[in-house]
Image (cartoon, rainbow, N blue to C red; front, top):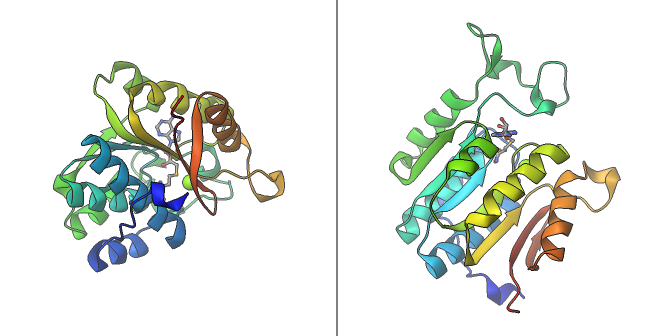
Length: 217
Ligand code: SAH
Ligand code: MG
C-alpha cells in the first residue's frame, strides 16, 4: 500500500526546524505527513491545508512540502488553544498565555518558528475558527490534514467543512486516531471511521496518523 505515497523525505533544514518546534507530532508521524503532502501536491498541483497550527510544528513540514512542490501550505487556527490546552488542563503551557489578554496565543511562537525555518513565504496562515473559514472558502485543495480540536463538535466540523473542498485526487490525513479509548480521545477516530464509510480508503498508517484517499468507485 505504501507505493501509493511517494517516498519523499524532508531536507535536513526542514527536519531540524520541525524537531525544534513546540507541538504535538512525533517524528515518524511527521515524516508520513510530509510524504503525503508531497504526494498530494504533485498529484493535484493544489495547496495543502492543515486545521490546527498551534506553534507550527507540523506546519513546518507542510511548508517544506509546499516549497518542494511549488505550491502553498494553508494552516487554520484561532490560536486560542483547544480545550485540553487551557489553564488547568493536561496540555496547558503557561508560556503560551498572552499576559495582556489573559488568553492563549500561539500565533507569535508559530510565526517565529516559521521565520527561523526560512519558510514564511510558503505558508498562508488563516487565523480564525475552522468552520467559519471553511464556510467561505472557495478554492480546491490537494490535501486536508485534520489536527484541530478533539471534541466531536470540532473534529466533525473540520471534516464537514473542509472535505467538500478536497480535489478528487486529493488526500485526507487525520491525526490522533486512537481505535483503543485507552490511548486517547475518540473524536478523530470517529471522523476517520466516517471517512471510510463515505468513500475514503486508508493508504498509510503511522502511529495515530492515517492517510486516506477516495476510493476509485
Ligand atoms: N498541528 C499541531 C498541533 C495542533 S493542536 C502540531 O503539529 O503541533 C490543535 C490546535 O487546534 C490548537 O492550536 C487549537 O487552537 C486549534 N483549534 C481547535 N479547535 C479549533 C477550531 N474550531 N478552529 C480553529 N482552530 C482550532
Ligand atoms: Mg494532533
